[in-house]
Length: 254
Image 1 (cartoon, rainbow, N blue to C red):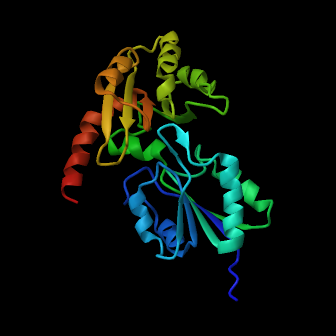
Image 2: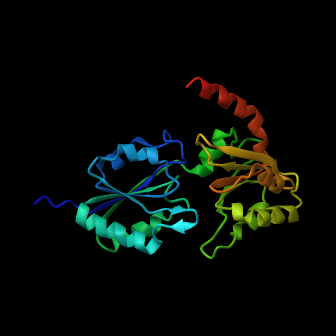
Image 3: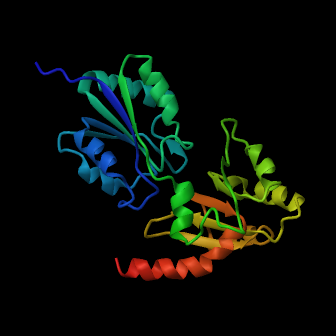
């Protein structure tokens, strides 16, 4: 009897465009006996899985979780012990608000080998696709990447700290807290700072709203922007007009 070694590989699937995945990630998917995948991955990536691989959706759709996190942890261990190589396929990078580290910690307690394949984070790739550089000489020397919703379902206190700086601020999972975010930046007299809200970034159905702290709420409402989306705040958003036209020209020639 061929007993397969239990193993977990946590794989970053990138921000949405199926081409934005690493070769190492594809190799992990190809070798998997079981793949547990989230809602934010591009399901076209599952074409790399073998015909024998078991594919299990464990994400959230329309506000409903297919599995709670504790159930996912237990499922990884159970499948690894019975099937062998489990790939946990997560959107973006699994270590940037992806709970990848939590799953690895749990699995290691059960003596199972664990590996990580980093992914291209939406926090960087999505603005880039819109021609927005997170840093630029004379405009931004640094950037923050902040979760919009903490474990307690509250806006992170780091948003208020970031609002006091001159850095670019990227907020993930923050659409439900947009009003609070606007108020925080307004209290710092930053009503005129540029803002981009990018929905379904890097995908064919990508949609974007550009405005300022003062106008972005009405723009989001008018364009009916919603999750999954990221919020980019800072002067670098103004670079979109120039770099965006260059990107469109390059994309047309690919």
